[in-house]
Length: 480
Ligand code: C2O
Ligand code: CU
Image (cartoon, rainbow, N blue to C red; front, side, top):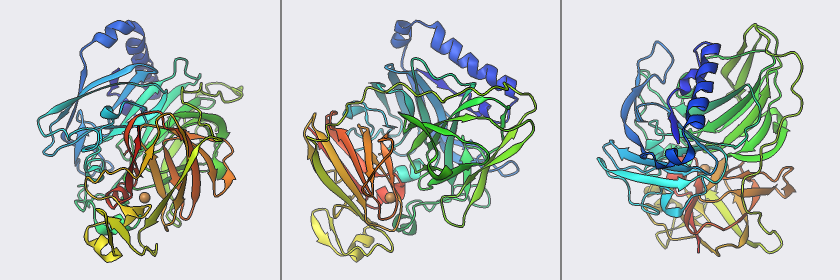
């Protein structure tokens, strides 16, 4: 495994230097050391500590953040499919932490959920994470302890598992999308877990960043084919991206290959926790500029970043059809034999919730609010470290879950330890049956997912709007 600290080279620096660096990393690290030598090498360390970063645009002061290895986002961890991630995480924060490896199908004790799969890593202590990465794709890592604050302060990074034979592209780029709530002095606003955020859309910020920085134009060349990996690490912001003048193809959702297809309604919808891999042919002409806009929230469209063409044409002829990624070794659910369950997500403002179960007792919405809670799954509001399973699944059996969003808000629902096929939305089969680990449910939407419960342990299922998770929209599936 290697940690790539050169991620900012995809921005700002001259194109040719960037290309060299990216190529260089691939050659030196993936190519030269024999596999066994790499596996036996001493585990690398990743340090969580306070730090500073230029999050706001130039001209503003630096922001005090919490960072992995001093950078925001954390270093991009790169492995090849089937390789083992071996990493000692050292906690130099003043509070406990953990790391969850979002989307990786790993053994339960490596899943990084504080109080469920491991004890929190105390300040000054460390924890050795070690697991194989069975699936190629775009994943990410973040704390699973007070994540509504720790992720917001900057603790998040990408984890890229490379295919044995990646598709041919000119450049493989990563955009870690984030959204920060900054004060005038570019400090992170300290109102973490405010009840208004819990009970409404989550903590929406005022400063979108790409790879931890205020977006600078992406320099491209006419004729280039790019692979663009997007990771939404924001606490709450859903991105709905339009690529003006371009026709990107989605080749993977949440790291899992999908038959290449265009953006539905021309927009890439990416809820918190979600990833997408795109192939974009740069069909613009020399010196042209195009906008990438985010139009998810009504009447709040803004220009996220520009695509700025340089003069030099890379190729005149088109590259032809977008290649598909090779499938990952995910078990196919048996839909005939599958056992079915419903999960109903309720609560929030404008939701008309009548009551909830809290710590095994029926309580009124008012009492729920007094505990800082606003949401339920199947009538239960998850509280503190109450990790009693809401469903027990048989190891090896196929399941179809109907996820119903009975609220006025969108919710990206994430399942740990597994990936699932999205079978239908509002009763209509999805055209691609995409594999995902986080599925965005729009208000009042009903989505069917299917998977084989093939990974034993207690696994979280929760909304990845971190304030909703904090506010009760969370539960545990036991696979045994
Ligand atoms: Cu990305 Cu339970 O989290
Ligand atoms: Cu939610």
